[in-house]
Image 1 (spheres, helix red, strand yellow):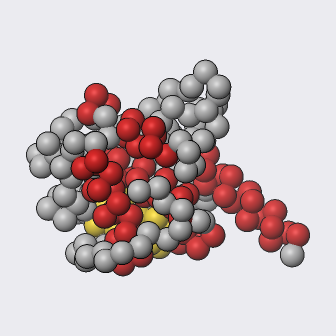
Image 2: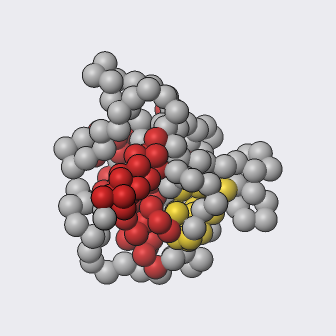
Length: 182
């Protein structure tokens, strides 16, 4: 039992530190499970729908119109081959704008941590956000878009969530503005 706890703690710590975000061929506080009527997103695992919907809502609250359906963003929850990888966004021509969330990470994580990873990957896939390695004066990561390779502590929680999302949806940090984001 103690071995499983250590393995679980190590996996979560590693997942938090090392997100793998691949780019091929170039280019409401959440306290419990997201609730309410969630509509379908074609090509997206149903468990991800509330997070996709929340991403659109949070963008709207910050003056951006983001439509993940129109952008044809797809997403699945399945095992990723690399250890410590919680999520990926692929930009490949055969599978453009596709989010993959690691099944083991998903099964062991709470709602807020899941949101953190899904929003990070959607930041790549929809907002064309690159990693941002800025560190706050207190040693916490300045961006939800950090790579996990820098020397900062994640501080994404119910209290700090709004400021992290303000930064995520700040057009000043977009790599390019996609059509459909206003």
